[in-house]
Image (cartoon, rainbow, N blue to C red; front, side):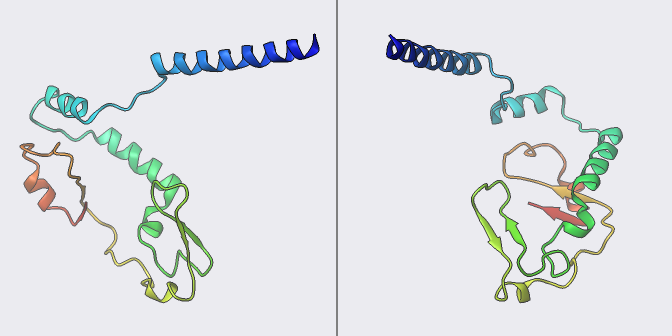
Length: 145
């Protein structure tokens, strides 16, 4: 009788787990939009882009509070001493520990002339195609691809 109850208990927990996974699959908490949906949303908003100064200031504050970008933007001897572990962006299992072989390769301090007045971050997703932002991107002090 005891083994029968244990068997039923495992069956019930397995069933509940499967139902929970099905629920999350059918009703996801958050779903990342597809590239097509992002492009359609950009086009829906119109051809002209306008700067949202409130969002810019909020993003700058969040970035400064979490990351100290003026100091940590580039890998340097100042911010990456021997023994420091450098994690690859977006990778959970890939890292590099700064050693005697890699440390001399780093520059002493950031190579950027700070403060940068205007930066552009662009990718290859096609969202900027026919956006009219080319001149704005070209006027930037620094372009990150």
